[in-house]
Image 1 (tube, rainbow, N blue to C red):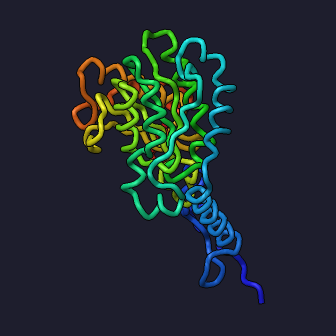
Image 2: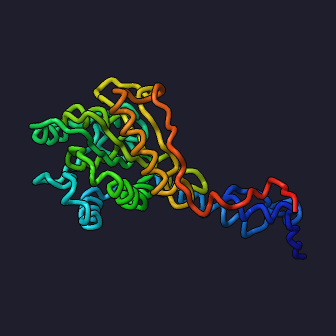
Image 3: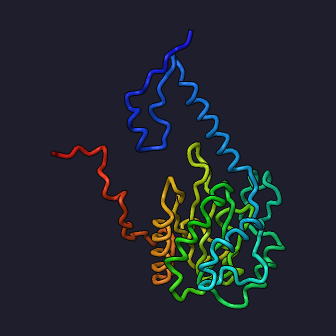
Length: 276
């Protein structure tokens, strides 16, 4: 005998969040379609962690998609792409040994040393982290938004680097070897069931090997369903300006940029009851 699905009274609130709320029930269990959706979300999260990032393909894609900004930045000025790898030579090792993901292998160190003939104001390193999906989906669109803001500044940028099997702290070594004053690390964040494509950004001023997380500023959940590329780029530009002015980053630097005015800010809060 089939059981009918009982709709949860909170069902209308699903329009305001991706969270797993108001699932309803069929007898003493959740409906079949909700169970299948859960299994799909779980599979996507696992794939985001285990699927390798094709760094060479990503670099060529970025070079093509960021072509309009290439002449106003030095992102692609290197004769050879700065494709790097940590000491973790496989994905399995990377997941089991976080410490190895924080250090570049010898070949990558040598590759970067050849680019350190001058000092740079900013270096950008794209790292696969725990979600290659996040990088593949968001890195290019975010960089377009950021470069659009800073392309008329006098920021001397280091060539773009892409690192596989890396953790956040690997950016410190990249900055030190490139002799860059500020490093921005774009990294795939630990995927959730409903956010396998969440990208994080870490900005560190005067980065060098041995820096700790208290010396970094983080902007999290950069993706279409999270923090928009324009808003994230706006916050990044604020942090870059203030970190250079104050000569620091991390817990001593607070992100107090004014929010970008969009149609979303004019929408009424469904939780607040207004008088007619």
